[in-house]
Length: 64
Image (cartoon, rainbow, N blue to C red; front, side, top):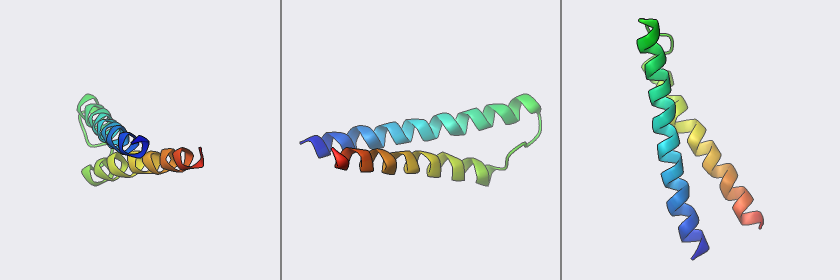
């Protein structure tokens, strides 16, 4: 039961964090008026950072 709850909320947390990161970079580009960071970097950071965070949380969860 605990593992199912972990995966449900962990995935939801990672998705929301990825969306927040993407929107922050997008708003920085809109404020500046030109492309500071490319779209490929937006997507890469929006996927890899939450995924890494989920993996670290999983390692911590399994150690308990």
